[in-house]
Image 1: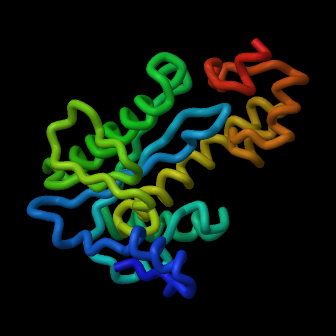
Image 2 (image 1 turned 90 degrees about the vertical axis):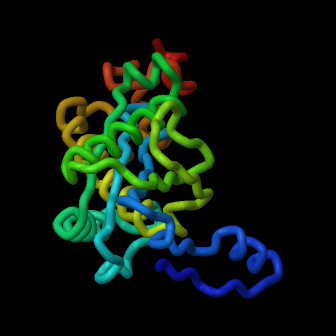
Length: 218
């Protein structure tokens, strides 16, 4: 199980109680799958979800919120997860984001990630553990949401790392195709460099046309 540092102040202790690690292994029966998305707040690129079923937590002491790890660490850890455990990836396109909104697109990507993982293991999920506070709609699986799940629930942490590495690689490739925007550095997030590039060159086909920071330059 994941372990957080002990809180030192009263306020921190209250936060620690809210974000206690979860003993996810008791949440069966059936395969227990963690799922998380990355790229939700970006101005460009798809939203990507990862799903992970862990055979055990042995050798996964590094698991934490993927945003707390360096890019080099994530690139090192993702293969360890992929080689020893079951993982799935789901993608919702820029067009889908603009059509159904980013929340629904994120949930769609999560569903696709779980379904890909189920195909790989030839079995339905017994319980889907989701980062955040929104369950996947119209999805006939037992689901539980966890605020700060990527810090508290090992399969969610693993899913987030795999998804982040997958999406970052995609954005680096797009950086080579669209050199004006610097996708390889900011990965589509709203950095000052990215916002200036949109203002100078206008959006490209990978920009989310309904997002503030993009739609003003159409």
